[in-house]
Image 1 (cartoon, rainbow, N blue to C red):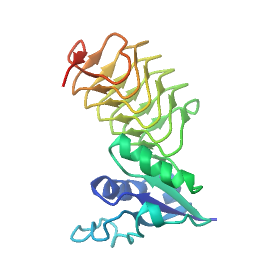
Image 2: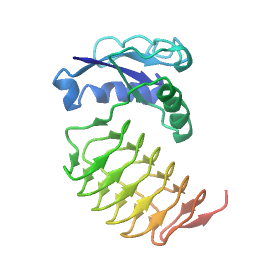
Image 3: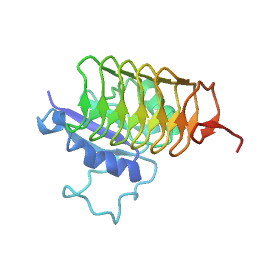
Image 4: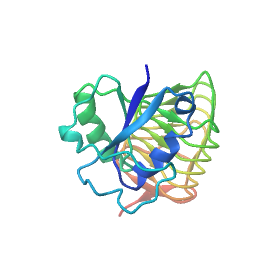
Length: 217
């Protein structure tokens, strides 16, 4: 039976996810359509041209929407804090989340991908990689074998994670950042643009540079 995708968030990232969803194999096979968006501002899509005719409606805020039997959800909020909050609200109502993976991404059959994950084009996910729930992976990233990525992470374009490297829940690797093999960053860590992680870092820090060092800001 065909599912109906409801996108949580109708702002910039929501519009990106709407276009991206049309490209994934499950949509092309007719396994789901796009029912609409959830947001507390009903006019967010006004004035934006839609690449596929017209945007579906904003169905109301997450707080008042009740999941229907054939609904599936994707949380299109770029900030991991709010992704956690609003996906949690829908999970508490029994909502089912799906992952969206570009047909132009290479994902090993031996990789484990959580729910609510987005993996964009030209990304390589090697053997025995594990990516946690509600993580966003932007284009042109490379994950070596046995990498571990937590839940609610954000991985921006051109990121590299070497074999057996790890990142904890809620952490962000900004554009062109890298983690060399067997090194780990903890939870809620931000790794700055172009930085190279060459040693382990604990939780709740900002790191920047090559080699990356803790920054106080």
